[in-house]
Image (cartoon, rainbow, N blue to C red; front, side, top):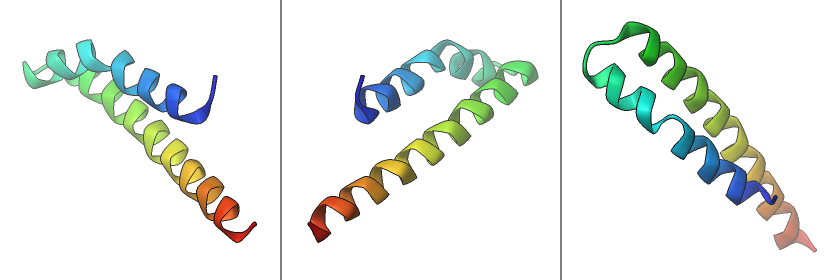
Length: 56
């Protein structure tokens, strides 16, 4: 699985918790924030990977 597929999977995996969090479920909000931190880190890794390819 490449990084972009993994990123998409992370976002899709938290959809249900996102909807619960919008409804007021604090625990679901915590889970969404955790996944979003993972998304942020993976997106940064993808950016670094693309910058490395531009230098080649």
